[in-house]
Length: 188
Image (tube, rainbow, N blue to C red; front, side, top):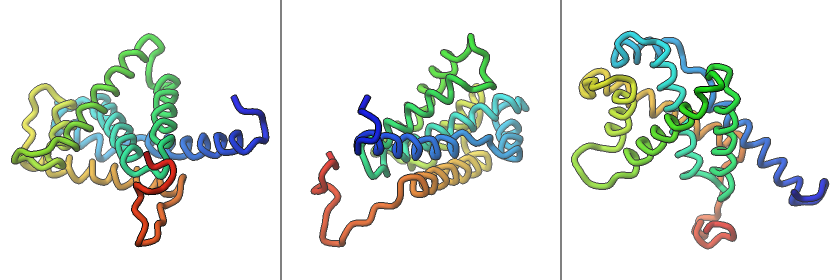
């Protein structure tokens, strides 16, 4: 650990504070109306399961947004570490179920990431991401029609909120028009 009051120490504290702000936004409880919608649309009325799926979705999409939109390489790592620490201390999770919750989060993160990055095919990424939410919320739920449209809208809102929380915590990239991001130091 760097010595206190060095520039590296101050930067690590600023990064940690920024990551905490993002994690707090990503750990917000889902709106009750959204949880009720998902419970009715896909989770056979199981409101608790619907809430968990929405918590996982918000956190996973937030981490993916941090990986894509971060101004520095460390941002996504800091947000990831913060999310895992918050999951490990979540009062909603029994101590003996925390490992299971981490595995479930990892499964969802992988599925959402793949749905967003998969190239080709006839199904657009936003449909694939919406279908992920509906599939995780139920065993064999129908993933087309009205439930899919709202799932897409909801997840797009979560991604926009994550983008805004990153901007609020870390600032917005400002580059001169003649400079490509790939030529900046630390961009690799």
